[in-house]
Length: 298
Image (tube, rainbow, N blue to C red; front, side, top):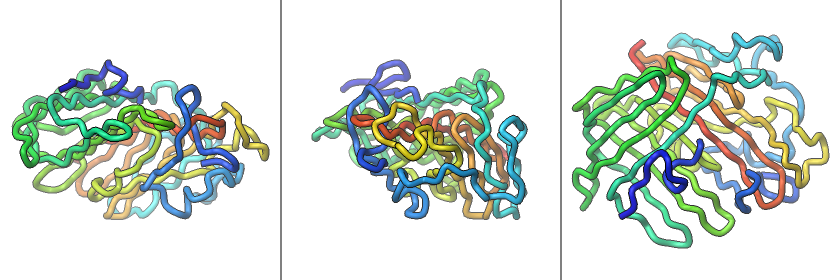
């Protein structure tokens, strides 16, 4: 059974359109099947207006880098969405999963799907380089070693303890016909259901909300102008979009591609890093998302 580490292409991916699907160049064609994007935000991505959002009473200046970090109280229902601010060069992330001996599902493209109870063997974080080693069991799979890797800004914090009981949902798909390779995971505390750590390196968020527990995440278009104006056909320039993270307790935050923000809920501080959120309008390509979120006691 092949082991997938952070380095191999099939395990780590460094992490729709008027006449063509949303796309990522140089990879092949695919249709955006992001099940987590709501009808209000993702049913017609190519008709997105090139105007600034109206999620707050005042517009955020493009040079105001302070708006990339937003903090909300437990009772806030909206932290005020981010405008199209420039990418912050330190807001980068990578996601990888080593599935060890977990079985590969053969099909038109190979996939791995995990919904397991796990025990944390070790959890380390060195300047934002996170590694969580797990032993996971599901059905006939007993105590299979799975390791999660995340690279985030140096001050990214986690609260995962050795010996802790957790629940892991994870997914990987290999490259297929008109479909690109990608993966995601969600790690939650077994006792509270709180999201401890999650990451996506994929062409969609498909499947995330079904397992995200108290959180949901949806794509938001219109945060930044379309790079191709009104002629969005077969262009290599992607639209910078955003993701809206919403907690069941009320707090939410919208983060455009290349920015970072925080909010408080469930007695925890959540740190969301949206490294890449790009929707393409070229032929034979697809969108690309890389984001991570972690939490620590507030």
